[in-house]
Amino acid sequence: MTESFSEKNNLGDELNLMLELLAVGKAEEAKVISQEILDRSRSTSERNHEIEARVRVERALIGAIPVETIGTELRWCADRLNAISPGTSLHGLALLNLATWHANRGESMMALATHSEISINNGHPLDINSLSRLEVGRILSAMKDYGPSMRHLWSARNGFIELKMYPEAISSSLEWLDLALDDVSSDSPNMSSILENAKPRAGPGNTYLSSNRDDVKSVVEYLFPLLTEDLSGISRIDLGLILEASDKLDREIWKNAILARIDEIQDPNILEELQS
Image (cartoon, rainbow, N blue to C red; front, side, top):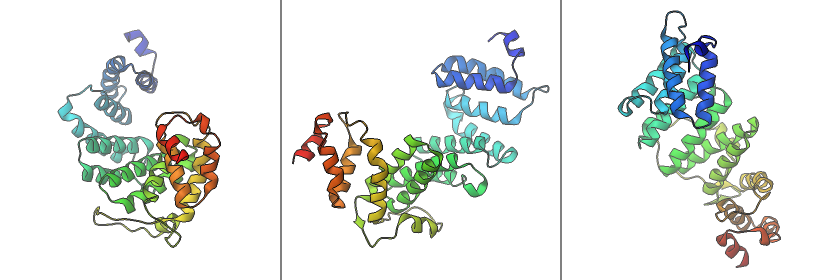
């Protein structure tokens, strides 16, 4: 970027340009711009704490700083934003990235502790909160803490559906369904009541939760039209979950609807299950 071009753009414009470059995979160009934005955000004439924190988050993620300092840098950004703009999307984004960094290092408890700082009660927007709940659900599932995992996945699903974030809603629905089908019962409390009565715990455990039959039915009915628009693909675990739900709930209508389009299916496992 030339000096004359920089002078024509405010810091917000520069930051947006950097983010656009990152979105199209031009990380090296973004690194160059990020250094300029960082320097200007610290200058006397253009001092901007929020932009400084944001660009420092991005620089940590794109390898513009030494690897051994990434965690410290992300923590600094989260703490700074907590001080100057708590509960904002930017603050939540910094926490999400810090939690992901911990999770990628196998530091599950630190990741969970970081996610616990994200909350609707703290002012964080629904999209940030839902993304956090989805990641918490995944971490707890990996730890075999299935009951709370299902609760967090359901919370994430509700948020994504409300926001019309369809890919995320599908993903959280499938991950919940995968756990729910292990044990389906008509006598189990539904997820709405479980969320309403949820209380904080001292820490993760190895808990288990039976799923309510009506909740499973509701999730499959949400997923079915979305997943069956296209039945192609050689690995369709999603269709496998629908077929399993069809058997568990004794609702042949789902299985029969897929069977009627068997010529469109490419996944050999699904074909074998339909033909058995």
